[in-house]
Image (cartoon, rainbow, N blue to C red; front, side, top):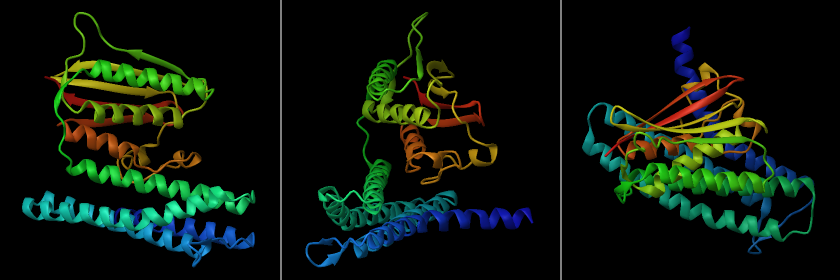
Length: 307
């Protein structure tokens, strides 16, 4: 019985992730139809039709991305390096083409909805879903590009990168009126954190993603601690929070692209943040780990080889 469950659970998860955009688009199209609003883009295509086509296209994008990635993982596991390289290039071209095909319809829909003076709930739902789809397409594009892009490697002062990102994040939280305790602990004695060889901008993106996640999945008044240490030839960056936490059953899925836990569904998100963090770490020869207790908090550690 447990073996059957292990077989069908991933399949159900894949099917849910792939069909979710199409279902969301159908809901948005129905909302527009019920409000008797039939916006027309470029004078030929009704808005309801565009929403459905957009949802189907994004489902194809996600399904194709995950399917190709699964093939890549399988081939890599059995040592087919040449085949993996070919599939990687096919994956990149696939994402680029679908990004091109979907970007214009999404932009047109968002422009039409933003120009509307109608404040009906149906159009607000459609506008929100269009924004979400645009963000998801952008993050999938970034994730795909990062897999093959050449890194601009150089000595990176990790302490400075982390300090800058934390300072910017605190300012942003204050501007939004958020009330979370944010503490930064970086060593200075007997010596500061060593440098790492890598891309400072990408490391900054990873740190920011972890900070955003820590705030997003915690309540106002919670605590976020950022720590930097050196361990066994690695710089270890840790972002810990007193947030909602993740169950042990869900913890194994946190690195899966587009996966979101039960608590995460309470807030907006794409399910790509941690996938991006792990990819940045691995492109630098490092790794990521996560520990969490439901109702207590979560700790994510990024390990980067020190110079």
